[in-house]
Length: 616
Image (tube, rainbow, N blue to C red):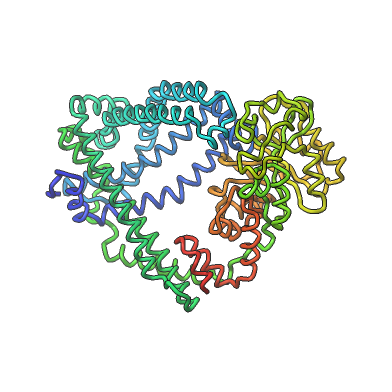
């Protein structure tokens, strides 16, 4: 390793000269993380979530759980495990880099066994660092909460998100300043702890002595460390940008711009997909390896080589060569690429399009009409959607009204709180002009009015909104639906699992679900009939698993053609969208596709080239 260390790019020489052991280590550790640690982490998450009394947690329930003593302890354990996974690969590569630097063999098996022996200490280091960062982060968190309460606490948050008044930008600017200060604090702390991992591994010391020695070695030289890390960050960003541009170029060159052979298009898209995966893997490998080399470079430059325990070599092993040579790595990579291509081509006829995927108009046809109004409900009916999703809450007189926010600031421009106002008072407010002046006659509808409009024309998904003042929301909704004679034309859902459970207990025959954006644990074990998931987390494996557990899956809120088609391809049971007419037309078109066209469409969506299918 005689290459220049003057810059991050100078580390490319040592990496190029010793890429084989680094690549083998990277592959071995990645495989170990994928096969062993990732499943164990998933099991750990489920075990920790069980402390809450439920098999899964969603959205605000996660926050409430984390704020409890058992939940906070669970968070500490989980973050420590995740930190350990991150530290593991760096530990392996730093160890390999040190051995190569000293012209010693870098046996994969020996390094992995060495890491396994040191795993408890690495875990201790991870939890120590997390606790320190958390402790120093508390004042910044308090400042963010104070900014929110002082500037954004007067009205429903959706008003600030939609209208973006002056207070919104003031709060955003202050939050950016606070977060910048927090980032500077974390960088300062981490610059002092940068040598703790190599000291723990190579110096054969515990977490606390490793951290203390690292901090002492960095005194007065943190700027040098930050400058080196900044160089690595900039190089990494440049590499990722170059990779993205190269992927775009290759996919553009491989894929025809005009209609042609479907088989040719399928092969082109498959090759482009494989190229993208390979390039992503290489970029990740290079970035990770360069950081390990950078840590080693600084470790030596700061005179810490003297701290290395001479017995470390014996503990790692004495193999003279990496067990896998360059030719073997190349053959394995080509074989993996070939197998992947065969799997892609062979899976075409196994694709299954979920013809039963339904369209659910989000707050009505809310892209073309003001949300949760009778105009929006009528638009949903006219679009041909099977369902309309509405939000309901209690007014001051106990009646049930259809509105999303806790107040009328966003849709009516007035600070009336729904829970403090009667239906008569709410009906005075124009809730359509904010969207377009042509809707100035729109008023907040009651649940009865919506059901009268929808009966025998479209199903109604009733989302129960909880803002803390409800007395008999679920009971009132059930009674109104019964009176309308629509018990077989409605379903209900909520962000609140207790609310969903209460609704189900009142009406066991209803389909009742949980609305979720983020979650922990096994959602499939919750006692609900369906899960309405944020489209970002509604992956194909998750949808399949939930279906196998007897749950329906809805995806929200999907408003573009590519996203709608992708969700349908993943097999969701319903798509919640502001654009019901678009979704209805697109799904009808998809039903006419043959398996090859479905495969092409899925790959075209991946590369943002959905127009290719239309040309076919």
